[in-house]
Image 1 (cartoon, rainbow, N blue to C red):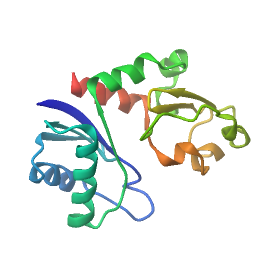
Image 2: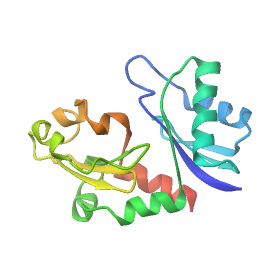
Image 3: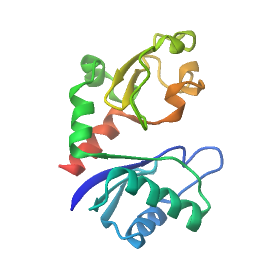
Length: 173
C-alpha cells in the first residue's frame, strides 16, 4: 500500500462547501487507509493499493453520490510531488513568497504553447510548464489577478500554493 495526495478542485467556492471532517469520513468509508486532511481546501492523504486514475474515479463518484458534490479529483504520489518541487523554475520566488507561487495540477501534460496566458498576465505573472502541472508566479498576489480567473488551460486544473505543495509532500514522506 502506498500513500497518495488527493486534491479536489473548487470545493469551497461557488456555493460548494465541503467540511474536511465529512471528506475524511467519506475517504475512510470508501476503503482508503488512514485518511488525513490538510487545511480546509480539499486536500487529503490516504493509503491505497489502487492506481491514481482509480482513486480519482472512486473519490469523484463517492463525492457525487453521497454529498451531491461534483468536482474534479487530482491524485499525486510522493515521487510525483517531489518531481514538481524539483522542477520548479521559480526557486527564488518560492523562498521569498511561497503563498504567491501556485502549482496548478492538471490531468495531463501542460500545453506546449503558453502564449494564451499572456493577455491575462497584466500584473507581472509568470507561467511555466512542469510535470503534469503549471507553475504560476503571482507577484501581486492571486486575488486581483486576471490570470487567476481566466478560462485557460490552468482553469482545468486545481491550484495549490507552494506552502501546501510542500506540506502534502512532507505528509507523503
